[in-house]
Length: 299
Figure (tube, helix red, strand yellow):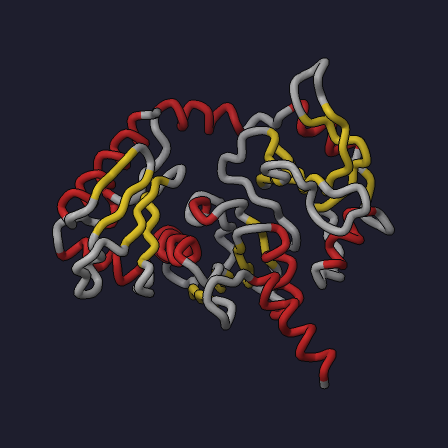
């Protein structure tokens, strides 16, 4: 565990113990500081660069963080920047992953591929040059690798791709592959994102995943990038030319984290920030798109 992760874990442990709860390993429970909580109802867990909170009584993450701040836990203690080792890796990450780029170059445009069928099964019809399909994407160590169909996404900085994201698909493209963690990255992400659509008229959106980003674009017309993680809101580099930034976050605890990180990191003079959430609790933007399509079909 890196020094920054150890520091986060220690802070999380103190929160749990100070709030009448228990901490074990990478998660714990505590009495929620945002409401009169007599029995621990606040889930506390470690993300990669942040402490995550989920109040089972319904308090959102921003209320929890504000209440903790009044108890002396400032917001900077709940997030960590990269450690020295991470920063070294970050510099190295600006050099593209050769293995990732080899897969990207061999992948085909979506066209009528299983990857396009997968997106269409989720109500996503738009096309992006940042997405391709590879029928035999390697997974696993050399000599023991499996070769599986996957949607390949370029994870890019200004100079081009440095890594890829792979969504491994079922053989009939009806959904993701059934094994554990069918979505995986290859290469270090650094400040890169899946740049699905170029900013337009100073507007850009960020969403957690590829399907959510494509769905938010379909519903709003705002060009969107996928950060590949709620914790990566605030880490992904946003062009200075963006004057209107939309944070298309999930309507859950992870989305509250994303909104908090994004609002803190991307605020600047001359830029307006918008936080947008799906209507229903515990849904993402693909859920929102599919619900909208269902309502439209019944009219």
